[in-house]
Amino acid sequence: MPEIRRHDPRVPTTLVAIPGTGSDADYVRRAFGPAAREMGLTLVAIEPTTDLVEGHRRQLDALAETAGPLIVGGVSIGAAIALEWALHNPCAGVWAALPAWSGDPAHAPAAWSASATARALTTDGLDATIATMAASSPRWLAAELDRSWRALHPGLVDQLDRAAAFHSPTVDEIATLRAPLAVTAAIDDPVHPHEVGMEWARVAPRSALTEVTLDEWGTDPSTLGFGCARGWSGLG
Image 1 (cartoon, rainbow, N blue to C red):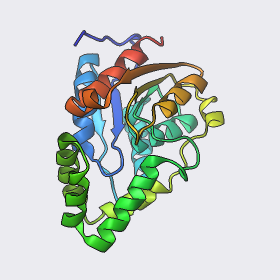
Image 2 (cartoon, rainbow, N blue to C red):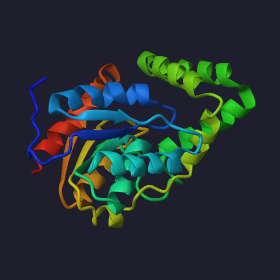
Image 3 (tube, one colour):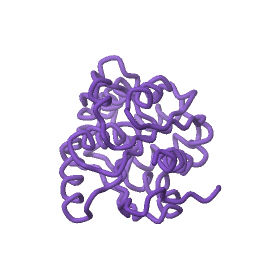
Image 4 (cartoon, helix red, strand yellow):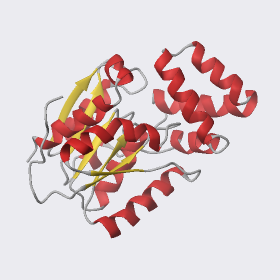
């Protein structure tokens, strides 16, 4: 992996990363940690709480008070929450990996999946839900979700329900973003549509889009962070 350097010595040294739905800080450390180290950034990986969206907002507010201007980012809904926060707070950039939807979640595959998983957990229980998920998922994804779902349960149901109801920033709102936006989107991931990542990058005033495949980020989560880091470094 080529060395990446910060494009401006005034850039803050803290990157705050938010996990996706059903995921946790362990994953975002693996997704963003290598790129953060390469860039000389201190990574703060946020652990989800039952009060999912508001919990992340509060943690971002608190970190902004103590760590100064931040680079904020995340995976899936974590990217959306980071972007929403950046629309209302000064920051040095947004690293958005695998954005899942813009605006209303009603027709988003990721929101539907979160709702369906929450229902299954309620009716069938954790072990049965994991077994069903694993039967239709790539081995790496099954192993990852088995680990994180067990770690997050029993608060996982509330987290999934809150995520499925989250209204992501709209394209009109993204068009007002002042911070540079670096998006890493998968070209073949049906849960995180490529079109959403392209849309975010298209409407943001300063943006960069890096494209990866499902197998690439599934095999090596750091692909997501490095994609965002490279895009952000070139925005100046």
